[in-house]
Image 1 (cartoon, rainbow, N blue to C red):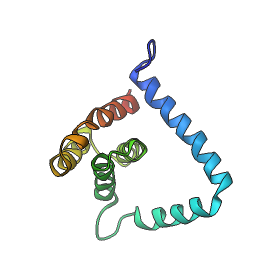
Image 2 (tube, helix red, strand yellow; image 1 turned 90 degrees about the vertical axis):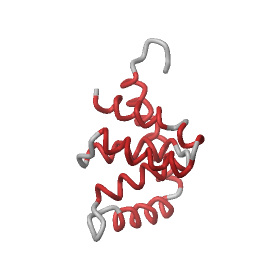
Image 3 (cartoon, helix red, strand yellow; image 1 turned 120 degrees about the vertical axis):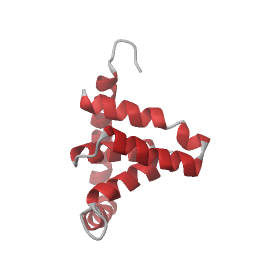
Length: 119
């Protein structure tokens, strides 16, 4: 955490920076973004598996593969659709159990993102 900034400010700054970077990518490779966005929209909705479950799976995979953007973006989506902090932490704990130490080291990012977005 940067000196003088709160965790919430750091998390919010990360989302602003990511948004600006994503906008640049969308401008320069729109087919990639549109293709991925279309797939995302078709998959990340209620079906035989609920959207809530899909988002918990997505954040857990983010932890397992140690992907900071995946973790932060899917924690945000989980909170937006009503997942509780405990549901997110239990789901990501499964990723730690399956992936071990490298996934474990990303659990603080999960907590920081939840706490930063909820403050």
